[in-house]
Amino acid sequence: MKILIIVNVDWFIYSHRLPIILEAKKKGYEIHIATKVTDLAKKEVLINQGIKFHELSFDRSGKKITRIIYIFFKILNLIHKLKPNILHLVTIQPILIGGLAARIMGIKKIVYAISGLGHTFLSENLITKIRRLLILKIYQLALGGKNRKVIFQNPQDHALLSKVCSLSNKETIIIPGSGVDLKKFNYSKVPESNPIVMMASRLLVSKGVYEFIEAAKIVKKKGLKIKFQLVGKPDKSNPLTIKKYEIEKWESEGYIEYLGYRDDLNKIIPKAHIIVLPSYYPEGLPKILCEAAACGRPVITTDEPGCKDAIKNGETGILIRRKDSKNLANAIIKIMKNKKLLNDMSIAARARAEKLFDIKSVVKTHIDIYESLSK
Image (cartoon, rainbow, N blue to C red; front, side, top):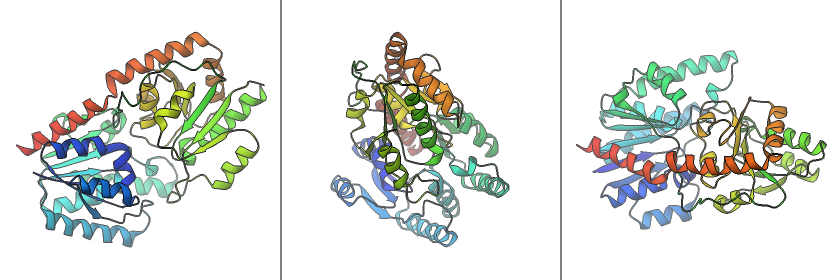
Protein backbone atom coordinates (compact mmCIF):
# COMPACT_ATOMS: atom_id res chain seq x y z
CA MET A 1 0.00 0.00 0.00
CA LYS A 2 1.34 3.39 -1.07
CA ILE A 3 0.65 6.54 0.98
CA LEU A 4 1.30 10.02 -0.38
CA ILE A 5 1.49 12.66 2.37
CA ILE A 6 1.35 16.29 1.24
CA VAL A 7 2.40 19.02 3.71
CA ASN A 8 3.15 22.68 3.02
CA VAL A 9 6.64 22.69 4.61
CA ASP A 10 8.98 19.99 5.87
CA TRP A 11 9.56 21.33 9.39
CA PHE A 12 5.91 20.61 10.14
CA ILE A 13 6.58 16.95 9.32
CA TYR A 14 9.52 16.74 11.70
CA SER A 15 7.77 18.56 14.54
CA HIS A 16 4.22 17.20 14.19
CA ARG A 17 4.03 14.04 12.06
CA LEU A 18 7.32 12.15 12.16
CA PRO A 19 6.34 9.33 14.60
CA ILE A 20 3.25 8.56 12.49
CA ILE A 21 5.31 8.38 9.29
CA LEU A 22 7.96 6.12 10.82
CA GLU A 23 5.38 3.76 12.31
CA ALA A 24 3.51 3.53 9.00
CA LYS A 25 6.81 2.67 7.29
CA LYS A 26 7.44 0.00 9.92
CA LYS A 27 3.98 -1.44 9.23
CA GLY A 28 4.94 -1.96 5.60
CA TYR A 29 3.43 1.07 3.90
CA GLU A 30 5.39 2.74 1.11
CA ILE A 31 5.63 6.37 2.19
CA HIS A 32 5.96 9.32 -0.16
CA ILE A 33 6.15 12.89 1.16
CA ALA A 34 5.51 15.93 -1.02
CA THR A 35 6.52 19.18 0.63
CA LYS A 36 8.67 22.30 0.51
CA VAL A 37 12.13 21.16 1.59
CA THR A 38 14.06 23.50 3.90
CA ASP A 39 16.26 21.04 5.81
CA LEU A 40 18.36 18.85 3.51
CA ALA A 41 20.07 17.03 6.40
CA LYS A 42 16.82 15.78 7.91
CA LYS A 43 15.51 14.93 4.45
CA GLU A 44 18.56 12.70 3.85
CA VAL A 45 18.00 10.91 7.17
CA LEU A 46 14.44 10.01 6.16
CA ILE A 47 15.48 9.04 2.63
CA ASN A 48 17.99 6.63 4.19
CA GLN A 49 15.07 5.08 6.08
CA GLY A 50 13.20 4.47 2.85
CA ILE A 51 10.97 7.56 2.79
CA LYS A 52 10.60 9.06 -0.69
CA PHE A 53 10.53 12.87 -1.08
CA HIS A 54 8.97 15.02 -3.80
CA GLU A 55 9.62 18.78 -3.89
CA LEU A 56 6.57 21.06 -3.87
CA SER A 57 7.52 24.72 -3.48
CA PHE A 58 4.44 25.98 -1.66
CA ASP A 59 4.09 29.72 -1.11
CA ARG A 60 2.89 29.67 2.50
CA SER A 61 1.41 33.19 2.29
CA GLY A 62 -1.18 31.84 -0.16
CA LYS A 63 -1.27 35.15 -2.03
CA LYS A 64 0.53 34.20 -5.25
CA ILE A 65 -2.21 32.87 -7.53
CA THR A 66 0.27 31.76 -10.19
CA ARG A 67 2.16 29.73 -7.59
CA ILE A 68 -1.08 28.10 -6.39
CA ILE A 69 -1.99 27.13 -9.96
CA TYR A 70 1.52 25.79 -10.53
CA ILE A 71 1.36 23.67 -7.36
CA PHE A 72 -2.09 22.40 -8.36
CA PHE A 73 -0.76 21.01 -11.63
CA LYS A 74 2.33 19.63 -9.91
CA ILE A 75 0.07 17.69 -7.53
CA LEU A 76 -2.06 16.46 -10.44
CA ASN A 77 1.08 15.16 -12.13
CA LEU A 78 2.41 13.61 -8.91
CA ILE A 79 -0.84 11.76 -8.25
CA HIS A 80 -0.90 10.53 -11.85
CA LYS A 81 2.70 9.34 -11.57
CA LEU A 82 2.51 7.65 -8.14
CA LYS A 83 -1.11 6.43 -8.12
CA PRO A 84 -1.21 6.34 -4.30
CA ASN A 85 -3.64 4.02 -2.52
CA ILE A 86 -4.12 6.61 0.24
CA LEU A 87 -3.65 10.37 0.05
CA HIS A 88 -2.97 12.14 3.36
CA LEU A 89 -3.33 15.93 3.18
CA VAL A 90 -1.97 18.01 6.06
CA THR A 91 -2.28 21.81 6.61
CA ILE A 92 -4.51 24.24 4.72
CA GLN A 93 -3.04 24.59 1.22
CA PRO A 94 -2.42 20.85 0.70
CA ILE A 95 -5.99 20.14 1.86
CA LEU A 96 -7.58 22.70 -0.47
CA ILE A 97 -5.30 22.35 -3.51
CA GLY A 98 -4.58 18.66 -3.03
CA GLY A 99 -8.21 17.86 -2.30
CA LEU A 100 -9.34 19.42 -5.58
CA ALA A 101 -6.58 17.61 -7.49
CA ALA A 102 -7.48 14.31 -5.85
CA ARG A 103 -11.11 14.60 -6.91
CA ILE A 104 -10.11 15.31 -10.52
CA MET A 105 -7.73 12.32 -10.48
CA GLY A 106 -10.33 10.03 -8.93
CA ILE A 107 -8.46 9.29 -5.69
CA LYS A 108 -11.03 7.68 -3.43
CA LYS A 109 -9.19 7.14 -0.15
CA ILE A 110 -8.23 10.46 1.40
CA VAL A 111 -7.24 11.55 4.91
CA TYR A 112 -7.60 15.26 5.62
CA ALA A 113 -5.81 16.59 8.72
CA ILE A 114 -7.28 19.94 9.81
CA SER A 115 -4.67 21.52 12.11
CA GLY A 116 -6.36 24.92 12.44
CA LEU A 117 -8.14 27.16 9.96
CA GLY A 118 -5.54 29.91 9.56
CA HIS A 119 -5.50 33.70 9.34
CA THR A 120 -8.47 33.95 7.00
CA PHE A 121 -10.67 32.97 9.95
CA LEU A 122 -9.08 35.61 12.16
CA SER A 123 -9.84 39.01 10.65
CA GLU A 124 -13.33 40.51 10.26
CA ASN A 125 -12.75 43.08 7.50
CA LEU A 126 -14.86 42.88 4.35
CA ILE A 127 -12.15 41.50 2.05
CA THR A 128 -11.28 38.74 4.52
CA LYS A 129 -14.96 37.83 4.97
CA ILE A 130 -15.32 37.43 1.21
CA ARG A 131 -12.13 35.39 1.07
CA ARG A 132 -13.39 33.23 3.95
CA LEU A 133 -16.63 32.46 2.10
CA LEU A 134 -14.60 31.50 -0.96
CA ILE A 135 -12.33 29.22 1.07
CA LEU A 136 -15.33 27.51 2.67
CA LYS A 137 -16.69 26.83 -0.82
CA ILE A 138 -13.33 25.32 -1.77
CA TYR A 139 -13.44 23.18 1.39
CA GLN A 140 -16.82 21.87 0.21
CA LEU A 141 -15.29 20.80 -3.10
CA ALA A 142 -11.96 19.56 -1.72
CA LEU A 143 -13.57 17.43 1.00
CA GLY A 144 -16.27 16.17 -1.32
CA GLY A 145 -15.08 12.59 -1.81
CA LYS A 146 -17.00 9.59 -0.51
CA ASN A 147 -14.33 7.43 1.15
CA ARG A 148 -12.86 10.17 3.32
CA LYS A 149 -11.61 10.57 6.87
CA VAL A 150 -11.29 14.08 8.27
CA ILE A 151 -9.16 14.58 11.38
CA PHE A 152 -9.83 17.61 13.59
CA GLN A 153 -7.92 18.82 16.63
CA ASN A 154 -10.71 20.72 18.36
CA PRO A 155 -14.54 20.62 18.53
CA GLN A 156 -15.03 24.11 17.06
CA ASP A 157 -13.31 23.34 13.75
CA HIS A 158 -15.14 20.00 13.70
CA ALA A 159 -18.54 21.65 14.10
CA LEU A 160 -17.90 24.32 11.46
CA LEU A 161 -16.52 22.14 8.66
CA SER A 162 -18.83 19.21 9.41
CA LYS A 163 -21.75 21.53 8.76
CA VAL A 164 -20.24 23.24 5.71
CA CYS A 165 -19.00 20.01 4.11
CA SER A 166 -21.85 17.71 5.24
CA LEU A 167 -19.53 15.37 7.11
CA SER A 168 -21.05 12.47 9.03
CA ASN A 169 -19.75 11.34 12.43
CA LYS A 170 -18.32 8.19 10.80
CA GLU A 171 -16.21 10.34 8.47
CA THR A 172 -14.67 12.49 11.19
CA ILE A 173 -12.54 12.09 14.28
CA ILE A 174 -11.14 14.53 16.85
CA ILE A 175 -7.55 13.81 17.83
CA PRO A 176 -6.38 16.34 20.45
CA GLY A 177 -3.16 17.60 18.96
CA SER A 178 -0.18 15.89 17.36
CA GLY A 179 0.82 13.95 20.43
CA VAL A 180 3.74 14.19 22.84
CA ASP A 181 6.45 11.71 23.72
CA LEU A 182 5.73 11.42 27.44
CA LYS A 183 9.16 9.93 28.13
CA LYS A 184 11.01 12.70 26.36
CA PHE A 185 8.76 15.39 27.89
CA ASN A 186 8.73 13.83 31.32
CA TYR A 187 7.28 15.23 34.52
CA SER A 188 9.42 17.28 36.86
CA LYS A 189 8.55 19.32 39.91
CA VAL A 190 8.29 23.08 39.53
CA PRO A 191 11.76 24.50 40.29
CA GLU A 192 12.51 26.37 43.50
CA SER A 193 14.56 28.98 41.61
CA ASN A 194 13.42 32.50 40.72
CA PRO A 195 10.16 32.26 38.77
CA ILE A 196 10.22 32.06 34.97
CA VAL A 197 7.32 32.63 32.60
CA MET A 198 7.98 31.28 29.13
CA MET A 199 6.31 31.80 25.77
CA ALA A 200 7.43 29.41 23.00
CA SER A 201 5.83 29.87 19.61
CA ARG A 202 6.19 31.02 16.04
CA LEU A 203 6.75 34.73 16.55
CA LEU A 204 3.59 36.18 15.02
CA VAL A 205 1.42 39.07 16.14
CA SER A 206 -1.59 36.73 16.24
CA LYS A 207 0.20 34.36 18.61
CA GLY A 208 -0.04 37.10 21.24
CA VAL A 209 3.60 38.20 21.38
CA TYR A 210 2.69 41.86 21.97
CA GLU A 211 0.35 40.87 24.81
CA PHE A 212 3.15 38.80 26.33
CA ILE A 213 5.49 41.80 26.25
CA GLU A 214 2.88 44.14 27.71
CA ALA A 215 2.15 41.63 30.50
CA ALA A 216 5.88 41.51 31.27
CA LYS A 217 5.93 45.31 31.56
CA ILE A 218 2.92 45.27 33.92
CA VAL A 219 4.41 42.58 36.16
CA LYS A 220 7.81 44.28 36.32
CA LYS A 221 6.22 47.65 37.16
CA LYS A 222 4.68 45.97 40.21
CA GLY A 223 8.19 45.12 41.37
CA LEU A 224 7.80 41.36 41.05
CA LYS A 225 11.01 39.52 40.24
CA ILE A 226 9.72 37.27 37.49
CA LYS A 227 11.80 36.49 34.41
CA PHE A 228 10.02 36.43 31.03
CA GLN A 229 11.54 34.24 28.34
CA LEU A 230 10.58 34.31 24.66
CA VAL A 231 11.38 31.25 22.53
CA GLY A 232 10.98 30.97 18.76
CA LYS A 233 11.88 32.80 15.60
CA PRO A 234 10.16 35.24 13.23
CA ASP A 235 8.29 33.67 10.31
CA LYS A 236 9.42 35.74 7.33
CA SER A 237 6.84 34.19 5.00
CA ASN A 238 4.01 35.45 7.22
CA PRO A 239 2.82 39.09 7.00
CA LEU A 240 2.12 39.10 10.74
CA THR A 241 5.65 38.17 11.74
CA ILE A 242 7.38 39.90 14.62
CA LYS A 243 10.42 41.83 13.45
CA LYS A 244 13.94 41.10 14.65
CA TYR A 245 14.53 44.72 15.71
CA GLU A 246 11.45 44.55 17.97
CA ILE A 247 12.84 41.53 19.80
CA GLU A 248 16.22 43.23 20.20
CA LYS A 249 14.51 46.34 21.61
CA TRP A 250 12.48 44.35 24.17
CA GLU A 251 15.55 42.47 25.27
CA SER A 252 17.73 45.59 25.55
CA GLU A 253 15.04 47.25 27.68
CA GLY A 254 15.08 44.27 30.05
CA TYR A 255 11.53 43.05 29.54
CA ILE A 256 12.45 39.62 28.20
CA GLU A 257 15.26 37.16 27.75
CA TYR A 258 15.23 35.96 24.15
CA LEU A 259 16.29 32.33 23.67
CA GLY A 260 15.80 32.17 19.90
CA TYR A 261 14.64 29.04 18.14
CA ARG A 262 15.17 25.89 20.21
CA ASP A 263 14.76 22.24 19.34
CA ASP A 264 15.29 21.14 22.95
CA LEU A 265 12.01 22.28 24.47
CA ASN A 266 11.98 19.12 26.59
CA LYS A 267 15.01 20.55 28.40
CA ILE A 268 14.00 24.20 28.74
CA ILE A 269 10.28 23.85 29.60
CA PRO A 270 11.10 22.18 32.96
CA LYS A 271 13.21 25.22 33.89
CA ALA A 272 10.12 27.43 33.63
CA HIS A 273 7.29 27.75 36.14
CA ILE A 274 4.47 28.71 33.76
CA ILE A 275 4.05 28.43 29.98
CA VAL A 276 1.89 31.08 28.31
CA LEU A 277 0.38 31.34 24.84
CA PRO A 278 -1.87 34.43 24.47
CA SER A 279 -2.81 33.35 20.94
CA TYR A 280 -5.83 34.46 18.94
CA TYR A 281 -4.61 32.67 15.81
CA PRO A 282 -7.17 30.02 14.70
CA GLU A 283 -5.24 27.09 16.20
CA GLY A 284 -5.81 23.38 15.87
CA LEU A 285 -4.44 22.45 19.27
CA PRO A 286 -1.04 24.04 20.00
CA LYS A 287 1.68 21.43 20.47
CA ILE A 288 3.59 23.60 22.95
CA LEU A 289 0.64 23.49 25.35
CA CYS A 290 0.58 19.69 25.21
CA GLU A 291 4.35 19.57 25.79
CA ALA A 292 4.01 21.97 28.73
CA ALA A 293 1.34 19.75 30.28
CA ALA A 294 3.52 16.66 29.84
CA CYS A 295 6.33 18.39 31.76
CA GLY A 296 3.87 19.34 34.49
CA ARG A 297 3.73 23.05 33.79
CA PRO A 298 0.58 25.13 34.24
CA VAL A 299 -0.54 26.98 31.13
CA ILE A 300 -2.08 30.40 30.67
CA THR A 301 -3.76 30.70 27.28
CA THR A 302 -6.73 32.33 25.61
CA ASP A 303 -10.34 31.26 25.59
CA GLU A 304 -10.10 30.59 21.86
CA PRO A 305 -10.72 27.44 19.78
CA GLY A 306 -7.79 25.06 20.10
CA CYS A 307 -6.12 26.91 22.95
CA LYS A 308 -8.99 26.44 25.38
CA ASP A 309 -9.16 22.74 24.52
CA ALA A 310 -5.58 22.20 25.66
CA ILE A 311 -6.24 22.93 29.35
CA LYS A 312 -8.86 22.51 32.04
CA ASN A 313 -9.53 26.03 33.29
CA GLY A 314 -8.69 26.46 36.96
CA GLU A 315 -7.15 22.98 37.23
CA THR A 316 -4.26 22.75 34.74
CA GLY A 317 -4.04 26.44 33.93
CA ILE A 318 -6.02 29.63 33.41
CA LEU A 319 -7.94 30.88 30.39
CA ILE A 320 -7.77 34.59 29.62
CA ARG A 321 -9.45 36.94 27.16
CA ARG A 322 -7.83 37.51 23.77
CA LYS A 323 -5.73 40.65 23.32
CA ASP A 324 -5.84 41.40 27.06
CA SER A 325 -2.37 41.88 28.52
CA LYS A 326 -3.76 42.99 31.92
CA ASN A 327 -5.77 39.78 32.16
CA LEU A 328 -2.60 37.84 31.30
CA ALA A 329 -0.51 39.70 33.88
CA ASN A 330 -3.12 39.10 36.59
CA ALA A 331 -3.24 35.38 35.79
CA ILE A 332 0.55 35.14 36.01
CA ILE A 333 0.59 36.93 39.35
CA LYS A 334 -2.27 34.78 40.67
CA ILE A 335 -0.39 31.54 40.03
CA MET A 336 3.03 32.80 41.06
CA LYS A 337 1.76 34.12 44.38
CA ASN A 338 0.07 30.82 45.28
CA LYS A 339 2.63 28.02 45.56
CA LYS A 340 -0.03 25.40 46.34
CA LEU A 341 -2.01 26.36 43.26
CA LEU A 342 1.15 26.22 41.13
CA ASN A 343 2.05 22.73 42.38
CA ASP A 344 -1.53 21.41 42.16
CA MET A 345 -1.81 22.63 38.56
CA SER A 346 1.55 21.04 37.79
CA ILE A 347 0.39 17.59 38.91
CA ALA A 348 -3.02 17.95 37.20
CA ALA A 349 -1.37 19.06 33.95
CA ARG A 350 0.76 15.92 33.75
CA ALA A 351 -2.26 13.71 34.49
CA ARG A 352 -4.19 15.38 31.66
CA ALA A 353 -1.26 14.89 29.27
CA GLU A 354 -1.10 11.19 30.10
CA LYS A 355 -4.82 10.85 29.44
CA LEU A 356 -5.11 12.89 26.21
CA PHE A 357 -1.79 13.74 24.58
CA ASP A 358 0.29 10.54 24.51
CA ILE A 359 2.00 10.20 21.12
CA LYS A 360 1.52 6.41 21.22
CA SER A 361 -2.25 6.89 21.17
CA VAL A 362 -2.07 9.47 18.35
CA VAL A 363 0.13 7.19 16.23
CA LYS A 364 -2.13 4.16 16.81
CA THR A 365 -5.21 6.14 15.78
CA HIS A 366 -3.55 7.22 12.52
CA ILE A 367 -2.44 3.67 11.72
CA ASP A 368 -5.97 2.45 12.42
CA ILE A 369 -7.28 5.03 9.96
CA TYR A 370 -4.82 3.89 7.28
CA GLU A 371 -5.76 0.25 7.87
CA SER A 372 -9.49 0.97 7.70
CA LEU A 373 -9.00 2.69 4.34
CA SER A 374 -6.80 -0.16 3.10
CA LYS A 375 -9.59 -2.72 3.30
